[in-house]
Amino acid sequence: MTPQLQQAIRLLQLSSLELQAEIQEVMETNPLLEVEEDFEFNDNAAPDKTEEQQIAAETPDASQIENADIPNELPTDSEWEDTFEQSTGPAAPSNQISTPGIERDNEDSSSDSLQEHLLWQLRLTPFSDTERAIAAIIIDSIEDDGYLKTTLEDIQQSLDLGLDENDPDNIELDEIEAVLHRIQHFDPVGVAARDLRECLLIQLKQYQSNDLANVELLTTLIEEHLDTLAKRDYAQIKRTLKISEEQLTDLVRTIQLLNPRPGSQIQVENTEYIVPDVYTQKIHGRWQLSLNPDNAPRLQVADHYAQMIKRADNSADNVYLKNNLQEARWFLKSLQSRNETLLKVSTAIVERQREFLDHGDESMRPLVLHDIAEEVEMHESTISRVTTRKYIHTPRGIFELKYFFSSHVSTDSGGECSATAIRAIIKKLVIAENPRKPLSDSKIADISVTKALMSHAEPLQNIVKH
Image 1 (cartoon, rainbow, N blue to C red):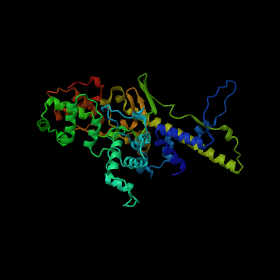
Image 2 (image 1 turned 90 degrees about the horizontal axis):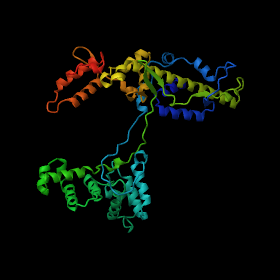
Image 3 (image 1 turned 45 degrees about the horizontal axis):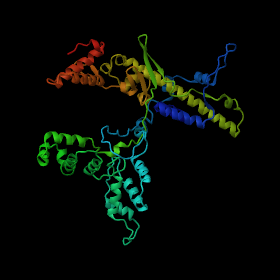
Image 4 (image 1 turned 60 degrees about the vertical axis):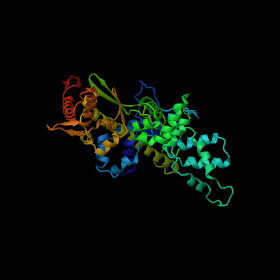
C-alpha cells in the first residue's frame, strides 16, 4: 500500500472532530494548502479553472478508488478497530448528601484526575513538610473509586526507605493516620477510606441533622450491622436495634443518599460532543441527504506558492514546494474520496431503512455490512470504516450509522426480522401490559415476531393490535 492510499483509508476512519484536527495539522505543516475564500463572479469573463477544479477533474469517483486502488483484503483490516478506542468516564451519582467542603465550578467538564484534584487541595491546606510528604504518598495510593487499598505500614515503609532504623525522625503510624484523617475530609468527602464502612461513616459525620438519636442509630447501623443490611435481613436489624419498620425505612433511605464510591464524582475525561456528518430530511416524499458543511473547511492549493514552482529547477526550495504540492493534491483527493464514499454509503443505508425514519424502531429492517457493501460495490472493511463514529442527523434524532445495522432473527415461517425492531416491540408490550395479568414469554415472542414482520409490509399505525 502506498502512503497516499494509507492516508485515504485513514481519513475514512476519522470522526468529524478528528478530521478537523487532522486538517488543522496538515495545514500547519503544508504551506501549499489554504482555506478557500469566497470570490466575486465576473460576468464579463469566463473564469479559468481553479486548482481545485483541476484536481476534481483528475480525481476518480469513490467506486473507482475502491475497485482500482484499494485491494480486496487490506493488511490493516484485522487491527484497525483496535487502533481507535473510545472510552467514557464514570457518571457522577445524582443523589448525594450535601456536604460542606471545597466546591468545584463546572465539575462535569473538568479534566482533572482524582489525584490532581486532591493535590490541588493539598497545596491549599496548611501542612508541615513531613505531613505534606505523607499526604502526597497517600494521595498517590488512592484508587480511581476513591478507596485507599495500600496499608499504613506500606506507606510508612515507603517514607522510611533509605533512612536509618534508629533515626529519631522516622515517621510513626500515628502521624500517617492523622494525615489520612485530614485527607478523608477533602472533596469528595469520604475519599481515602479503607473500606465501605469507614467511607460511609466519614460522610455521615458531615450529615446535618437535628435528630441526634437518628444519627446515633445510623452510626450503629453502619458500624455493627452493615453486613446484615447488605443481606437484607431487616427483621434481625429491627430486633437488635429495637426500631419499627418505619424507622428502619428512614435509616435505609438516608444511607442510600451516601456515596459508596466517592472517587466517581471526579470526571476524568472531557465531554465529547457529537457532530453529525450527514443530514437527512424528507422533501416531496423522498429522503434527501447532504454532508455537514461545517465539519471541515473548503481547502484549495495556494495559487501564490504553486506559481513559484519551476519545473526544471532542482533547487532545495523548488523541490520542497513540489513535494508539498503533491502532498496537498493527494490530501484533497483523499478528502473528496472520503466525502463521496460517506455520502454514497449513507444514501444506501437510508434507502434500506426508510420505514425506520418514517415509523421508528419497530420498522427497522434487518441489515448487515455485506448488504451495503454489495449495493455500493465496496469491500465490507471499507463500509465498516465509513460507518464507525459517523453520525446522521434525522427528524428522529442523531444516530451513529452503525445503529442501522441490525442482525437477522429467523422465524419459524422462514422470514427474517430485525433484532432492533423486536426489542422495541417487546419494550412497548411490557410497558402496555396489565401488571395483574402480564403476558407470558411465549405470547410476547409470538406478538413481537408477527408485528415485526407486518411492520415491513405496512405502516406501524395500521398494524392490528393483539
